[in-house]
Image 1 (spheres, rainbow, N blue to C red):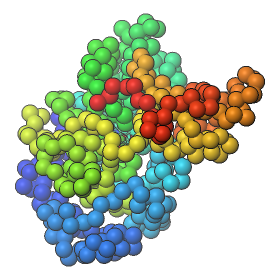
Image 2 (cartoon, rainbow, N blue to C red):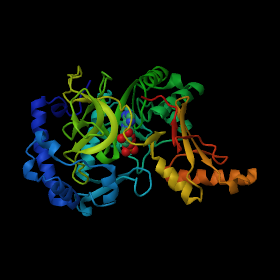
Image 3 (tube, helix red, strand yellow):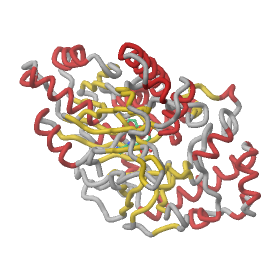
Length: 433
Ligand code: DLL
């Protein structure tokens, strides 16, 4: 069985890999300096020029890039290629400030698809496989990324996108899907539905590639057992292309980072000090091959651990642990990134005071998402029918903003508990980390 999609880089000796990274980093820094005034200004402020960057050892001289920079430079300010050379954008949901809009040249798409092809091959995928992709297609990177990777491997690709579980199961059965790509919570839901509908015995699945949200080892075992497959984790973010920044191999112990494209660092999120491998901190990436949307020392806000111990699969690229939390207030609900500030914006736009509480839980492997909103003394006196109407209006506005459905409950004024005078905005009951 083919074990690697690009064996020469996936198993490259580490000294050689570091040389390759250095070469690409030097070139990339020159590229952003020459083409992105925003980066040049940031580098000048830190007193560093491309001449100071001779290799990976000089990485720490460069300034960090954060979501705040993306917001400030929205939409074109960090694009390093003329738009005439860009062929695609992908994006996350959100308000103008929170939305990430990433640009791709054709070359960027090719490399991204290679990364996803590596993940599929590591999960045992070949041109004999039928790969069912039920990540969302469209602006979200999940569908397009895995779709491209699946084509490259030569799998028969089923571009299902998300939702319509009955149809998903029917195709899975009729076309004999062997690889399933979706969020882990949707995989668990599909498994339960397949059991309930009696289809489970007719499925040919052997592997699943699940990511975009946190999932535990318990959840992995549950999905593996129910679907009779091996479940592999995959990590990525829109800013860096999408899925395929890192992926699991057959060892299922951490995700190999595609280090020929992304240099990873772990920092203390408060002091910004670079930490050694093995220590827990915030993951920072430098994309060294991306042309249109380079990302230098980008702070992901994902908390995790990097390990450089050799892996029995033969890949030499270091591994990251599953993300263990975030250093900001972003929640991932049913695979969708949600910031409390987005909910605040919706409430204010709908004429409600922003006294609210988000309650997230995971019931039967599916995220529940409730938003409790305090009424004003005036609205409190409204009839039940009026309150229900307002709840529906808010629910609709939240769906438009976030792309997922929340249950909205209007509650009595001052009924949301305050601690030290400050309302607790998020109650996350899921035990994900
Ligand atoms: O979620 C890309 C993706 C699609 C990854 C499909 C894997 C599969 P964004 O919507 O930009 O991109 O969200 C990125 O999601 O910073 C993490 O916090 C979280 N995340 C992604 N993969 C994992 C994972 C896609 N395997 C944010 N485990 C990241 C835990 C993950 N969290």
